[in-house]
Image (cartoon, rainbow, N blue to C red; front, side, top):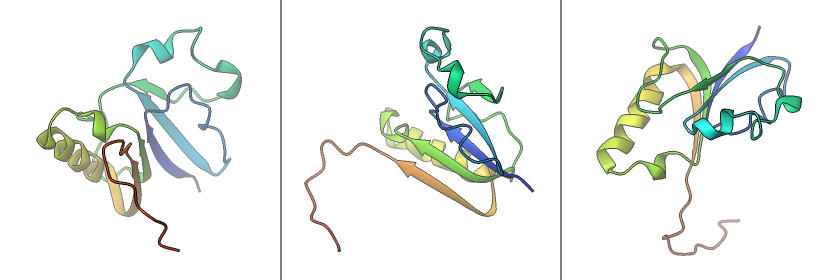
Amino acid sequence: MHITIWYIRCADGQYLNLHSNMLLIGMEHCEQWFQHENYNHSLVISNYLLLGDVLCQPFRDDLFDGILCCGVIHHLSTLDRRIMAIRELARILRIGGRVLITVTGHRSTPTHSQD
């Protein structure tokens, strides 16, 4: 049985074929990454790459076991748009699924390790 993962901002797709038991589907918002000179064809054997927008996912509800959203949310211009994006991710995530959202916190105060 395959685990389905939606990978938002997959860039050149280098991580789309890491595990044989996972079906990773990638989406990139930047059209330039899909041009031949930028896209790393040698690392991607899958045809599951889409050009799209995090605010409007082209999938039915409760589809994915996991979602990776790397370096996207903080680029949205308003808090409302960020909330819309997170709601859209929750919509397409199966019950019991997991989401990993990473953001760049260049304006945040440095923190110390919790270890």
